[in-house]
Image 1 (cartoon, rainbow, N blue to C red):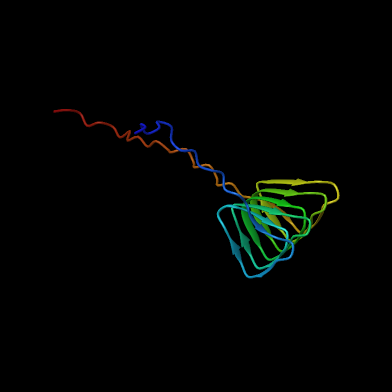
Image 2 (cartoon, rainbow, N blue to C red; image 1 turned 90 degrees about the vertical axis):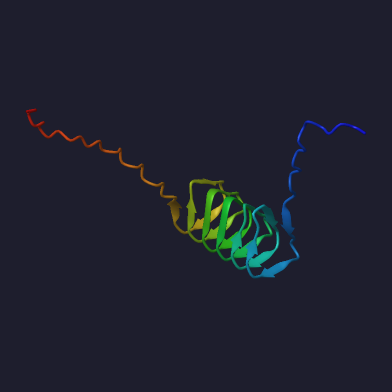
Length: 136
């Protein structure tokens, strides 16, 4: 009987979920993984990573860590990283840490940078400096 391997099994990379060009979703899309949308979503999209293809269309809000847009979005986007490629059309506000836009991309809305939490104030050191009473 062979001895068990001392190397832990490597996690297989998960394939992206695909909503193909001929698919229309009426409702929200939720995933903690990567999602490629080439069809139409009428609802909110909450995913770990989103890639919206040239034929992709989202009518709703997008929440993700990373978003790459080649298609059309009517609604707000909230993500750490947002990339609008040359064929992108976005009509809505984008809240982000990083925003990149290629020539040819259309964006109508506000670009809002994430507000970083204020650094905690340095702790004040309080010292009791009352005079000592003389010893008897």
